[in-house]
Amino acid sequence: MLIDKGKRWRITLDDVIKVQTDLPLLNQWTDDAGMQMKISIETSFFADSGIYAGMHASNTGLTAGVKSASFNIGTTGAPVQVTDANVLDYIVDCGTVLDEQNVPEQGRWFVIPTWMAGLIKKSDLKDASFSGDPGNAALRMGRLGMIDRFILYSSNLLNHSGTTYYHSLFGVNQAITFATQITETEKLRNPFAFEDLVRGLQVYGYKVVKPEGYGALICYK
Image 1 (cartoon, rainbow, N blue to C red):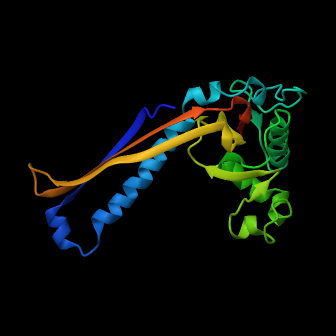
Image 2 (spheres, one colour):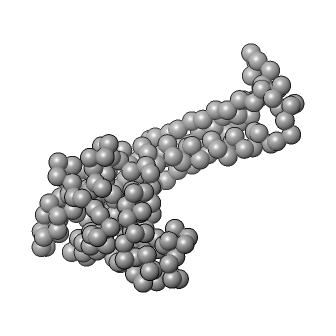
Image 3 (cartoon, helix red, strand yellow):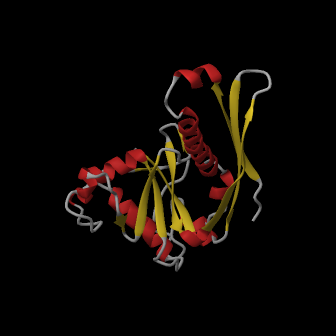
């Protein structure tokens, strides 16, 4: 696996501002820079066409299912509409698609758009009987829990084309490998101004290891 991608960040703190405030601005801004790096890296990952081209052909599309070819989980040209009435059905169908590939049940995950997470909270899951969480946990705490062996994650960064379609990825941990490291972080004085500079570099890379181990529900609201 190549570590061939990187993101960098830089913040500045003017000496006048530093004197006038008693807040640890540099620490706060550094923390925010770390969060912005996370958002940037995740956005680039979900937008990478190689991720979608690398999955097994039977794990997405109008005839998903390597054995039955009986599940319509959408294409970019014909995405499926997900509602509070059918959202659980689509999640179960995606689980069955993995079952037909003999994918392990442990370590399964499903990354869904934030609007889809809202539909789950409005669905039959609101009584928490599907996830095994305490009663009404989905409504009271926003906890989505687990459905049909998938640990659910909500993301606002999934690849999409406006409101036309969203790529909602699902799979197992062994399907894609990912590595990242912050290689540089340094603080220095700006020689051309009265201010401190802090900058950093984070490198990362990922690779599809098991194409049959993940797929995509291509959907819209």
